[in-house]
Amino acid sequence: MSRKISFWILLGVIFLLAIVFLRVMASFLIPMFLAAILCVMFGPIHVWIYKKVGQRPKTAALLTTGTIMLVVLVPMVILITLAIFESREIVSKLDANTIKGKAEKVRTSLKLDLPYKDDFENVEAHLDKLTSGVNPDTWQQKQLELTYLERASKNFIDHWEQDPNRDEDRQTKNAVAGLIEKYQKQLENCNKQLIILVSDSSDTEKKVAAESDYRTSLEAMNQSYRDLKTKILGGRFWATVRELANPTPEESAEYNAKIQALLTKWVLALGSATTSLVGRLIFGISIMIISTYFFFLDGRKMIESIKFLSPMDDAHEDELLAEFNKVSRAVVIATLLSAVVQGFLAGLGYYFCGVGSVFLLTLLTTVFALIPFVGATAIWLPAALWLYFIDGSPVYAIILGIYGAAVVSTADNVIKPFILHGQSNIHPLLALLSVLGGVSTLGPIGILVGPMIVVFLQTLLKILQRELSTLDDEEAATAGGGEPAAET
Image (cartoon, rainbow, N blue to C red):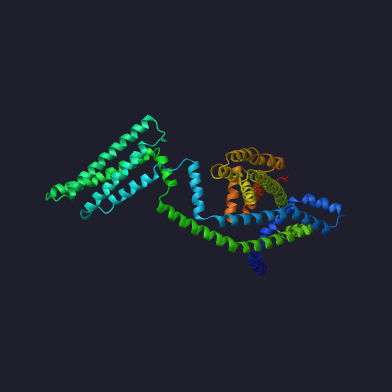
């Protein structure tokens, strides 16, 4: 009994210390994980260097770590640093007027400008005054406002009828003409009711009826104007799109204030976060470099120590290690190499097509290329659209679009099959969900960790299934009075 109590106390102490150990090592886990990945990726190079230096472990580990710094870390740090400076420059240059100008240029390119915009605003301003605060004390003011509305409506109709750029078929033209006639009749009807309401007539019943008719006519007139505007703008869908793309001055002022506040917040946050980001980046890279060196130097001894302390069967541990090597090559090397190549190719396209912010776009293309089903298209396609609609360079936009589809995105279909050779057993849907879930849980490192966790879980489930099958065979053999079958 005392040994059992001691055993459980020992387990409890180990469990508590393990929690404390994980909390202490939490900030080092991601750099150490990346170091392990780098050891797998550059393992063959380390073996080659080890043989070339006369099998001297420390020298080989140091040279391999230096090679990794030159090949991987230095270009990555330079690219990230340049991308940060470009992003800060872009954000600092943006203001509400710049965004408004770009939006107007896009709107014009997409042919979403609002025709007769001034006429629409004048008519709607008077309509709003007519429909607000309807009471007997304002009948004369409403009559004056209706006069202004009639003038604004006449100007609007004249501009529409005399517009030389109007491109409408006969059916649409007749429909608009019918809606104009209906709208004008309702204007006249509203005017008749207001004349009765402002008169000195003592006929109360007549005034009550006129007030009711006026309110009904006012609603009908407002609706007929909306129908007329919708028809002129090309139907309900295009009318909605054009109205959203052409906000009123009040809405524009509100949007500009929000954009300016958001940009100011971004600039301040980016400026304050740059120092801490650089500090964390330097710290993480330092830990990763040190861990890489010691993994190359004493990696085998570390693995043997972990295997010795682990209660898991050695065969299962060996299977997990083999799966780690396989998945690292299948998921990490293939995915990373494909993303880097796509980012590099896209960067060349951005540079020669004159997109601007080449380093930032190259970094974003590389990151998005890591995500299944999303890929580099999420960056190079908007860049091509920017060239076409905003920069006014349709030739370069088309070249970038063709280059992105034929070269950048196609590189993924060439590099991954060449490296994998059927090693990846992850279903594409599960791969996508594992990446998205890994990113939402662990951040950017989840792009690599998510698929590996899925594969490790699959491996553990296979091991569990084999163990359960073995137990079933032993129970069946015992129940039959024979010896359990030997495991093959």
